[in-house]
Image (tube, rainbow, N blue to C red; front, top):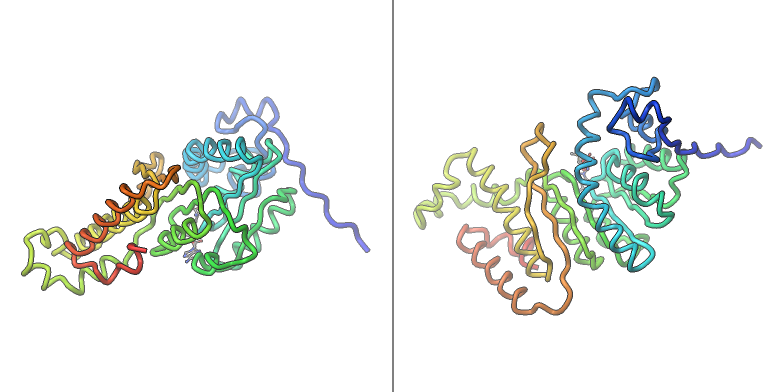
Length: 294
Ligand SMILES: C[S@@+](CC[C@H](N)C(=O)[O-])C[C@H]1O[C@@H](n2cnc3c(N)ncnc32)[C@H](O)[C@@H]1O
């Protein structure tokens, strides 16, 4: 019987390489960057994936302090990344933040089985043993008993359409302390607005905001993110909305950061909930109550 392959040792960049490539971080695994095709076999930065690395680093700046905070308090942290794709974010977070600390787990949730298989194989090759990958939708992950009951940090980057909303469902069900969301386009709200457009135009001049088809799509996307923020506030989270710089190739660069606040905050939660219901009503989106006002 042949012996199981030994994990590739994540190597620190050679001093010369670090100087040539300022993008590399101290102690970063060269093997990982090569496997993710960010570095070529010759140790050069791949121009196509260089931008991806920049984007992920930008997010790491936001996420590292959250992981460190939870690790500092609990000695462990669980992060779930929804719509993980090739898991660039999960792998780089693990390599830069969790591996050096020797603690913390990453769970990648991805609907495409072949991507999950590749991520599992890569984690095994690198010996990243506290990374797990779940093949299935975010919706399925909400009730998945194999995942920990509490997940501290939930991320979803460009998880398609309503997968961001499912990631919020997941975060609420798992009592997440932090959410980091970069929503993708969401077609559901625009669909409802389109359906009731004639009625809305009779009712209010504000319906001009979504009369033209392009505006229906764009306004639908914006109102969706507004509803997501209100929903999180109604559940006791403090929400910050900012821009994800370095994401120039994509129009979807809104970054939503949510932190669960201590205490009951009944008054603030109720106010947000009332605002949420009013916004749904004002824009003829009552059909979406079950999505957002829960
Ligand atoms: C645009 S890619 C983003 C990948 C990754 N988050 C990134 O930023 O590089 C969206 C990914 O979400 C996955 N996806 C879409 N809907 C999903 C769902 N409902 N549940 C799980 N994964 C989903 C797709 O298969 C795809 O890999």
